[in-house]
Image 1 (tube, rainbow, N blue to C red):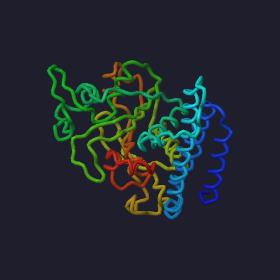
Image 2: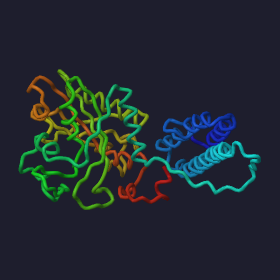
Image 3: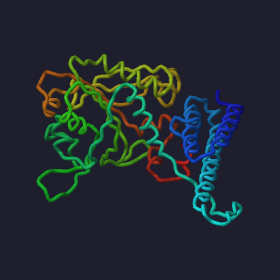
Image 4: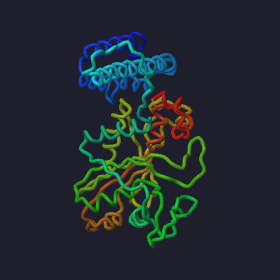
Amino acid sequence: MLNQEFIQNLEKKSLAMLELATTPSELGQCEIDILGRKGMMSTALRALADASVEDRKAFGPKLQKLKKSLEVAIADRRKLWEEAEEAKGAALFDPTFPVDPVLPIGHMHPVTQIVHEIEDIFSKLGFAVADGPELETERYNFDALNFPKNHPARDMQDTFWVKTDTREHYLLRTHTSPVQVRYMEKHTPPLRVIIPGKVYRNEATDASHEHTFHQFECLVVDIDVSVANFLWLAETFFTEFFHKKTKVRLRPSFFPFTEPSFEFDIACHLCDQKGCSVCKGTGWLEIGGAGMVHQNVLVAAGYERGKYTGFAWGFGVTRLALMRYHISDIRLLLSGDTHFLSQF
C-alpha cells in the first residue's frame, strides 16, 4: 500500500543496500536493484498509476524526490571510487579536496519505459522483437499491405513523401506494418513477433494528435490461427500491463491488410466500467486496430495462398503512455521539456 511508512521503509532499505556495496560492481548491481526498470523505485512509481488522485498528489512528489536523492547518492559514491582509482600511485590522496558538483543524470523517456515493459511481457510469451527502417519504400508501406493505388492514405495530406533521384518512391513510414512483410520474407511460420517503433503522419498537431509518435504491432502466423487466439493474447497482455483483469471487445472495421478487420476496446480501468470522462461514460476505451492477416499480404511475403492464417494487431504506445501517466497533451512527450520529463 502506498503511504508515508512505505516510502520511509523504501528509503531505509535502499540506503542500507548502498552501505553494503563495497566494490564498483556491487554498486552497479545495487543501482539496478534500486533504480533499474524492475527495481524498487520503478515498481513504486508504477504503483502510482493504480493509486487514487489524492495519493498520487500526496506521494508522487515524495517518490520523485527520493529517487533523485538516491541517484545523487549512487553517483557520489561512484565518483569517489573513480577518483581514488585515478590517484593510485600518488604519494598523497586527499579525500577532502573539492570536486565538481554532481551533475543531474538522465533517465529513460516515458515512452521508452512503456516500450521496454511491452517487450518484457511479450518476451515471456515467446515473442521475438523486430525492427525496420523508418525511411520506407512505397512497396512495403502500401503495395505489399494490399493498399489500392488510389487509397487516400497515399496522398500528401497523410504521408511524408521524400524526394530522391531513384525510380523507387520513398516515404517516412506511416505505420509499423511494413516490418510485418519484411519479417515474413525472412522467416517461415510458425512465427510470433512484436514490432515497436516510431511512425510519421502528415497531419496537424493538437492535444491528441502528433505528426511523430510511437506504435506497437504484434503478428502471429501459423496453421489454423483464429480470432479467439488474438482475444486471449490481447486480454493476457493488457491484464499484465495494467496489473488487473482487463476485458477486450471487438467492433467491425476495415483495414486493407486484414480481413476480417476490427477496432478493439479495453474495459476502462480508471472507473471500472462505471463511466467517466476518459471513456466518455461508455466504460470502454478505444485502443487500436486488429484483424486476420489478408491472404494478399501473406502472398506478397512469399507464402502459399491459403496455407497459413494469422492475426495482426497494434496500438499507439504514445497513447498508452498518456493513459498510464494521465497526460492531457500528447505534444508534451516530444517537447524536450526536462521539467516535464523529469516526473517519470
